[in-house]
Image (cartoon, rainbow over all chains, first blue to last red):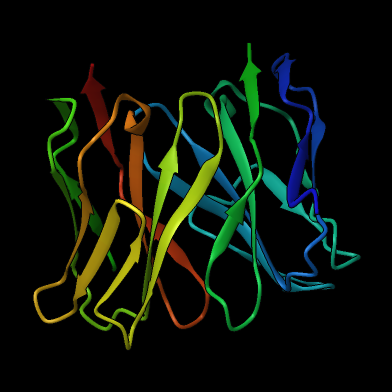
Length: 112
Length: 111
């Protein structure tokens, strides 16, 4: 199993540009999550999903959108990028009944 | 609102020492707690998961305990090694599968 994979690893965006961060898991996990991690801070939940077709906002959803059309994929869309969105983004997944969370390697995004 | 605090924020110790990292939470109605390791520039790796009905979990030189009455979890690292150098994060897990993370403890083990 590849686990949780994320692409791209790095990206530089100009202010106002848009992009999609990709996340795929091959463990058939129901729950999927997007977090952002700023320097010296813990992880903040952006959006999460309890299964295909079901998504919900986390603590810091403004400026982001998600969709979940399949169990495996959970892309995160940034519209009109702003410098405040400069961060490292992590995707994670959990199987129902397990509670153990698995993380992808992260995407380092810089908005200038 | 659930808050998770980790003390100390940073720790530097000589190789071979036994270490205790602390994680405290404000809501005692904890469901589960997970400890992670994060190496610089990398994602989080799961170390130990303690379910609400459990008091501790062990893996190799690591032991994590959970005391719901005091709102604390402790990660014990025995005989520390330079390869243990990393940031250690704890996460409170609610019954609805939401995770709230502490800000981590940066550990450096000196050879």
